[in-house]
Image (cartoon, rainbow, N blue to C red; front, side, top):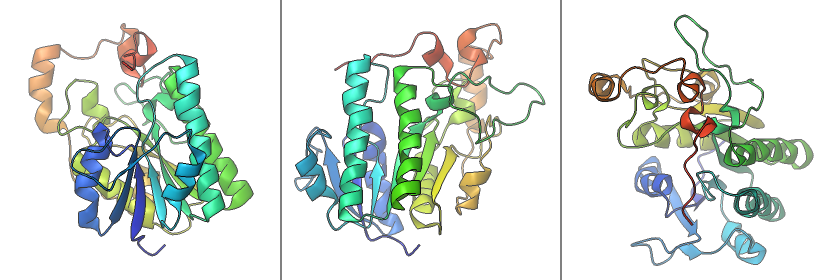
Length: 269
């Protein structure tokens, strides 16, 4: 599709949102920012809750696409996940449908399939059609988001690229992350591809750099035109020296979702 000019970025004050609001304008986008919290240095950003249907309707009005990063990004009680990630995502899709926004890029997560075994040795890469195997209520909400995106494509013609994000940080911080790391620059490249590829319907992709220790299949992301430029391997020796190799006997090391399967980090709010 033609490159969208105006894109609503939800979750703009969060870690990934902060990285993307710095990097995406270089790809030609004018960003409209939304978050539950004020966005530092952005006086024109919209401060609104995903439960506020009127505010969401106004926020999406006139945009060419939406990048949906907002919500709880760690484990929390089901009630909190339900409100922020499940009902909030539904409210956003309804606002997009009502205002005729043609495409959403949805921040899904590796935790939607977190109980999938990680590849070892010569095992094949984890395929994109791996059935949902969420490792937490958080992962469950991302499975819901993918299914909601499919429904809105089938029923309403609203396109979505669901990106199962690994870990998007300036550099990897764990041995596990060597396999799932997505550099911020590659993150912006992937979101740009997801916004501009033709005829995506509902497409699910894994989101990472072209890591030497890659665990999953990037073919659907590459089919969008994504060309990752980075690799976590330069960080490998230091991280392995500090933390050791992954132990297959450790349940957190044996599954894609890491410690989310055994001792997930809890949302602090």
